[in-house]
Length: 307
Image (cartoon, rainbow, N blue to C red; front, top):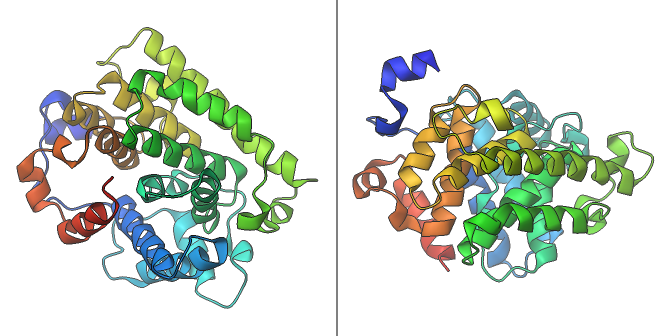
């Protein structure tokens, strides 16, 4: 926090840096988006159709010279293993629930026309390619769900309740068609017990958000109340916290997320995803949109899925 404040000044006045270079979060979001686009160009979204192009995009990102933005260890390890003939379940890091699982998942929530099973399955599968911990899967599912609900016009103040209901409804449901036998690699005695662990941790994280928003404190670092965001359920919780402090003021929400003690780039990435889903691309200052790195890639995917 002191170094962020020294470089950027008071958090409410933070400016987009020049040049507006993105982090690994946005690079992987674009990789996932391209993989989904390739899969859906070939027909209905299915596990078989999704796995290969997303896997290939992640491996391409792994080898890219632009992959120099301090990427997470889990993503790098899993992508190295995915660059082989092995089953993806063997590459998945089942002990990791790092936020790399869900900081990239927003495209799944934006793709129109998916069934609930497709959206949930795609969100969990893309997470599981690298992060095989059940909490990583559940947090990715919930992140995509939040983006989808907001893009469809859900009221922000009711969002946490909707997400908690969704978590309760899905807490014992293992998506075998999408995940195969991933649960066996994690050492659990059944697929239901495996996935239940993830939903339980996410429900606890969502309860912390509700508690924090009962007496909102915008000047307090959100990480103090909902976690630093290095792990998937905390990234979801603290990004929701930042967004819901300022649901109609996206730039302030983004600044609050970026000026935190924790994984501030991932918190900013997810807070921006929620705000953008809620308010649309017009939420952001025009001069920001004009100079963001990968602008044309972001615009083309946005235009493809703008509902």
